[in-house]
Length: 170
Image 1 (cartoon, rainbow, N blue to C red):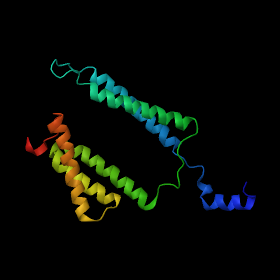
Image 2 (image 1 turned 135 degrees about the vertical axis):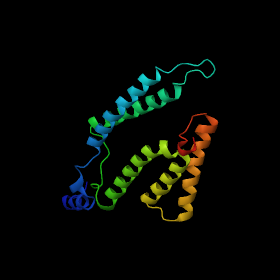
Image 3 (image 1 turned 90 degrees about the horizontal axis):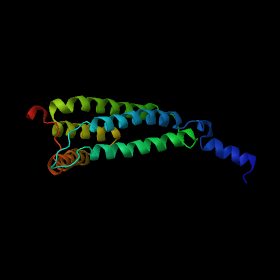
Image 4 (image 1 turned 90 degrees about the vertical axis):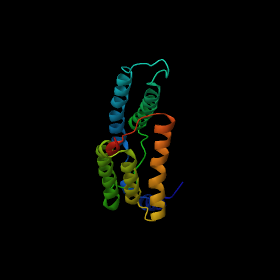
């Protein structure tokens, strides 16, 4: 058992003044946003035609939606039972700018990918994303920005025959 003085010093040193901060509200909000999206995926994928040669095209979207629904249920359960992860400190300063920049960058990507095309837009998105996150070595930036879109294109377009946005190259 720690003496009261050591306990107080340890508690102050470890940021006990911020002990009330947790991910509880964020976790509840995220779970309540994810669950309806999962149910919408189930609804929409149930309306797709079933082709005899490929089987049920809804298998992958429903599998992903099931995993997300399970994860959001677990997140909601942990938040409601008081076991949400604690936060070290409030988001602010450079961290807030970084998170905001990534959110804006992702929003621009979502609107641009259909118009410009997958490869070019994803290359630029990955390049800027990794730069915003903090990587400043150009060889790594370029390597990441080339490898990720190429791998995703190879897996989805070539291997799984999932059409990706062609944009300007239609």
